[in-house]
Amino acid sequence: MTPPPLVRFEGVTKRFGAEAAVRDVTLDIGEGEFFALLGPSGCGKTTLMRLLAGFETPDAGRILLAGQDIAGLPPHRRPVHMMFQAYALFPHLTVAQNIGFGLKAQGAPRARIAARVDEMLTLVKLEGLGGRKPDQLSGGQKQRVALARALAPEPKILLLDEPMAALDRKLREETQFELKSLQARLGLTFLIVTHDQDEAMLTADRLAVMRAGEIVQVGTPAEVYERPADRFVAGFLGQVNLFETPQGWIGVRPERIRLAPEPAAGAFQGTVLEVGYLGDRTVYVAQTAPGRTVLVAQSNVGGGPAARVGDTVWLSYPPEAAAVLAS
Image (cartoon, rainbow, N blue to C red; front, side, top):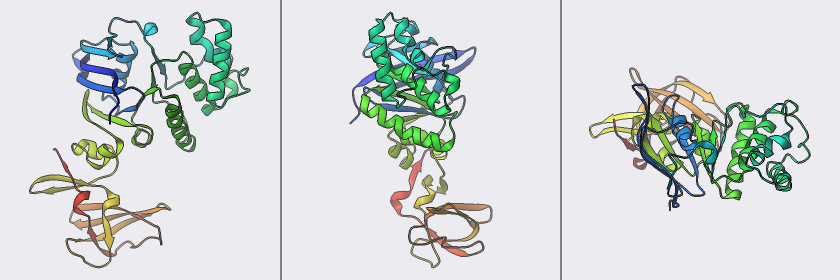
C-alpha cells in the first residue's frame, strides 16, 4: 500500500521561455519512500527536483510538503536538502567541517554540531577521517561526505541528483545497495533523479518515468518493467521485443522468450545471427523474417550457450509475458 504523501505536486508547470520543461505534473511521494524520477536527458526530472528544492519557481500549480504549500519559502527555509552530482564539497574545510556546515549555518550549538558530525561519520562509515580534506579522499569517500552533510540537518526529504554518476561501475553498484539500506534504516524520504534504469530499479520503492516534461507512468519497478504503459516506457526501461498484432502492439522482455532446437505449439522459427556469452546468461539475436530480429536472453544455469550462429531455433513465450502497449 502506498504510504501517505509527504510531497504532492499539483498541476505543476515550469517554462523556460516558450518551452515547458515541466508540463502539468501531478505526483505524490509518500513519507518514508525511496522514489525515483527516471527519464532521458531533458525530460524535466531535474527541473521537478529543483522546483521542490526551491531553486526554481513554478509558473502554475502547487507544491505541498507535509500538507503545506511551500511556493513562497526560499530554499534555506525548506526542510529539504539536496546532494548534488558534483558533491560540491568545500576544499578548504575538513570532512567534519563539511558535514557540520549546514548545522553551523543554522546556528546550532557547537556541542550539538560535534555530536551530529560524529553520528554522521559513523552512519556513512567514515570514522577517523573527520580531519581529512576532500582532496585526501577517494571518489566513494567524497560521495559519503556529501551524503552525510545533506543528512546532518535532519531534512524531511533528501534530494539526490545523479548521485552515483561519477563512480566506477563496481563502486556504483555497491553504493546503490548501501544507499537503499541506509534509507531503510533512517526511514527518511529519498527522491533520486537518474537516467540510469538499473539504478532506479534497484534503489526505488516506486518510480516515475518522464518524457518531454510529463509523467508517462508511475509504479513499482516490477509494475513498470513488467507492464509498461507504452512503447517508450517499454524501450526505456530495458530491452524489449515489440510485436505488432491485430489487437495492437505488445512487448515481450528478452528473458521471457524461450529458445528451443525443436518446434513446439505456438513457436515461430528463427535463425541465430549473433551469440553473446555473459556468464550467467547468453544473449541471442535471431532473425525471424527479412529485416525482423528477436532478442533472447537465456539463463546458463545447467549449461552454456544452447545455440550457435547459423542454427535454426524455435522461439516462443508464455501469454502472460506479453504486455499490451499504447502506441
